[in-house]
Image (cartoon, rainbow, N blue to C red; front, top):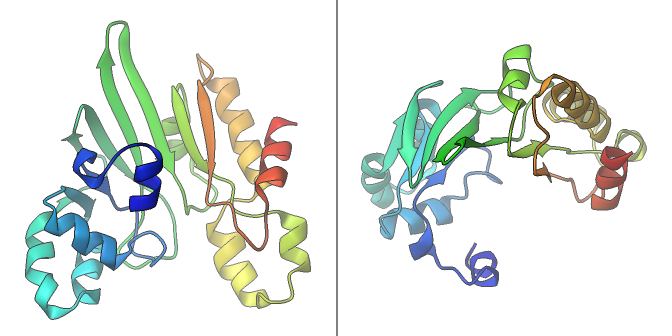
Length: 212
């Protein structure tokens, strides 16, 4: 985290808030949770995710984190820095639930809208509606179907139950984007592809399929 912030000429002191999507270790790093808590940076999560964080932490850190994490309810609006944030539920196989986030900020000609969603099953109509009319969209493009089929290191039950069941492939990402953009009144300035697997995808494959 510090290295990435340094690359942007920033430090943790520039963070106005941190949002936790779900309790899997690659999204809720406990060392980072402890550090941000110690520095007084507001943390936000769903009630179930907060409970999982408290359970996983060493006893000496539990009280501080319990006090520090601000738990939100789905579709509840709350302020973080200059943005108004609304969390929405997405389907994922994680204890405590999983959230995507809609950020809105007032500007001179209306509002600026950013949506972030990763680690989700194929989205419902309601979630797709959240993706519409964004200025910036962050969306998962986890794996390439061909690379997943050929990967012998991953057991078949994990491929089916976890990866195909709860992560969006490059092809599915394209299908979702096509549907969302057809129904939107404006085209996003940027679309960021997230959660690109290091073993069953490449950035080049995700970008090429999306651009095509």
